[in-house]
Length: 261
Image (cartoon, rainbow, N blue to C red; front, top):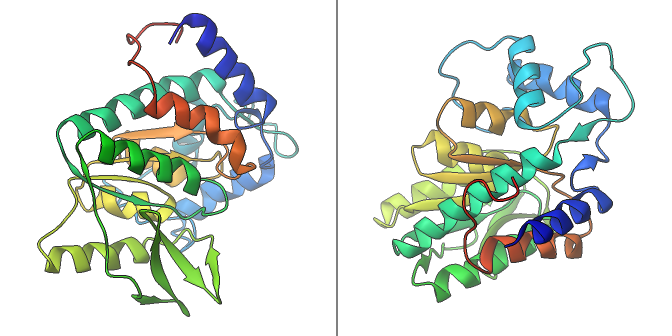
């Protein structure tokens, strides 16, 4: 990918608000830092803390790894995700994914955002299989929270009341890993987000993930060395806006580490 291609991708990310001035409000981002540190069940993402983190430390982490506004006096209104930070992380994400594919790993794909990120993982699963890796299948129907766990087009998700549901909970991934361990088919590699990614990384499985600016847990997991890569980007724009991101991950040769980034 040329420098011009990367510039075009950066412009696309900002035009579609995957990065830059994103939809999530500043006050939500700040509240979620507090909620994560308080162990809120929707925000802790199954991340095992290896040390105590202060609010200021997590805030600074979100500035440096996600690109939220650094001004502490900015407490409401617009917030941001750094486009350059996204591209740098996305480069590491695609490289790590391709390493797993080239190694012939058994890969598990899962999402807590079926209305947004599902298409990315579906195409990644296709690419993984074409590249010689295997895609792990689960036995569907494990009950959770009034619904159950399904796998559609290779991607594991949570279903509730007849619809695929948004979930931050880590418990579905723990149920899946228990089932796979009982079958002696624990994944070599996981591609996921939210509690699916946090729980897999905390279980010691090599995992890469995507996180929005209101998801501090996965950035903390990455900083602690559990999650291997955390890509900062809005995780619920209109799905077709992610097509250029997906193409970047699965198509073409890997760029050198410093090309345009």
